[in-house]
Image (cartoon, rainbow, N blue to C red; front, side, top):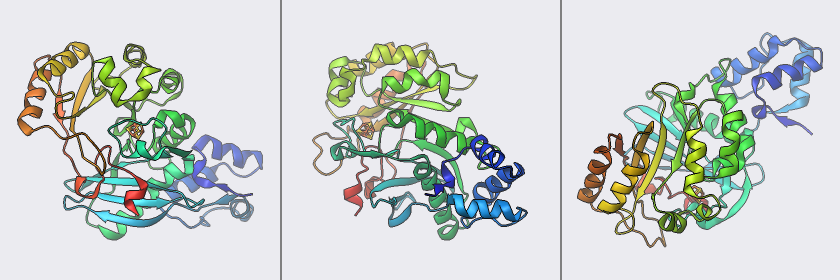
Length: 346
Ligand code: SF4
C-alpha cells in the first residue's frame, strides 16, 4: 500500500531515502517542489531514476477534494473538503485586506460537545490524519492562486476549525512540523496558533513535544459552573489545572497565551464576569480575544449588544490586559467561530 507524501516531516523523509540508499538531497528537492513551488504532480526534476521509481512506488500525492465553496461578502471563504473515505470537513480562509489566515479542521466532528458550537452537535466521527490536515492548506492555497491571483497567499494558520486539536495531538504536531520546516512552507512559529477547549492530556504533552507555536485557550468564563455548561470537559479537566499547565509553557518575549472569550448575551457578559476574568488573568502574558457569539441553526444563545461588548472590553483593559474584539467574519456563510458544521455546508 502506498503512503501519503504529505504525512512525512523533513527528517522522516530524509530517513526514508537514506534507508533505501538514495541520495538524501532528494528530501530538500521534494519539499521545495511540493511545499515551496506548490506543485502537486510528482517531481521528476534533478532526481535520479531510482529515486523517481521509489517515489512512484512508495507515495501517493492525493489531496482532499473541494466539494463546495461559499464566499462571504467580507471575502471569507468556506470550503467543504472531502477526504478519501468520503467524509468531509470545513476549512475557512479568513481575509484581512488581501492577506489570509487559514482555519484548519483537525477532526471530522468533535467529541467535546461544547454547548455553543455547531460542530459539537455532530459528535466525533474520526481524527484527521497528518496529510489531511496539511492537505487542507495546500488545496486552499491552490484555490487562492487560481481564484484570487492578486491576493497574497496564506500567511497565518490557526487550528480552530472542526475538532479539538489536542485530542488529535500526534497528527496536529506532525502537521506543525511540516508547516514550520524551512525547506518547505517555512511558516514562522509565531504565525501558527493551536486552540484548545482545555484538553488536559494534550496540554500535559505540550511542553515536551510541541514546537514553539502559539496556544489559545477557549476560556469563555472564569466561573467553573458556567464553564461546565459551555465546555463539558471542564468537569473532568477543571480550569485551575488547565491554567497551571498553560503557565508552565515557556514563552518568548512578545509571545502571549491567547484567551478566547465567547460573549453570550445575559450568560457571561456581565460586569461581574468581566471583573472576574480580569482578576483571573491579571499579570499574565495574555491577550484576550472577545468573540461575540455567532448564532447557528438551533442555538439557544444570543449575541450581546455592542455597548455591552465594549463595556466588557474596557473592564478587562482596566486590568492592564490587551482585549481585542474579534470580528464575526464569515458569519453570513456560517464560517465564523463555533458555526462550522459539515452538514450545513452540503
Ligand atoms: S468548540 Fe471546538 S472543542 Fe468545542 S465542540 Fe466545537 S470544535 Fe469541539
